[in-house]
Image (tube, rainbow, N blue to C red):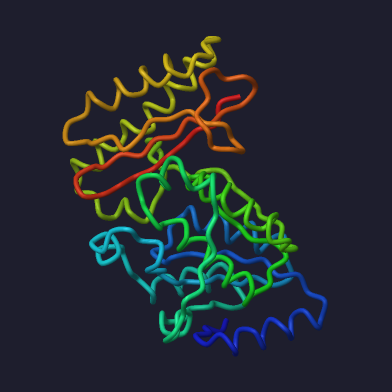
Length: 280
């Protein structure tokens, strides 16, 4: 397995793969790999001739400098994990390689980035759509793999691909959880034992939403109140949002007809965690 750091070298390797009519599966990551990433990598390995994983901590999608500085980094371990999963190539560029001096072009998106995390993290999704566009242009994957935990991101990227006529199949795979229900996230590494325990209220609130909805209650306000009451019982936690949204437009829904997504974002100490569950 080769680790490539230069854009032109990556493009040359991709061209060689395409010339041999081989399909490319691509898993973009920001490093600090965990079982959620591994599930994406394994699916990509199974469904494609060639597997490329990128490891790049993208500064332009962080709205908080402390969050960027404290984001876990473990490049050597990440490369070991990817190699163990039989990837063909790792793309691990530096920031100057992707954002050279004079860089001034960004990809923006309206509507889908106005709510949820987009409303609370100014500029975040401009960073996401820009780096994903760049990576897609460099790697030219047939299929790209993302996790449902970042639900808004998956909707944004699907729309990006459709609107810009990219011939890429965006695959969204289920959330991977620890045995106690907490969604696996790179940011979990920042939680101390007490915070880790407190974080369980997130999944409890989502499970409550699912059970309330299953009891034939469709009113979003009523479900949100049940969810919020569970979270508020936990100490040292701050709610960013508890919302029930349309799965395609991400707009708040007052009543669930068919399918909706219950979404949560909270701060536990200095760590922001997000999670969601589909109600249908």
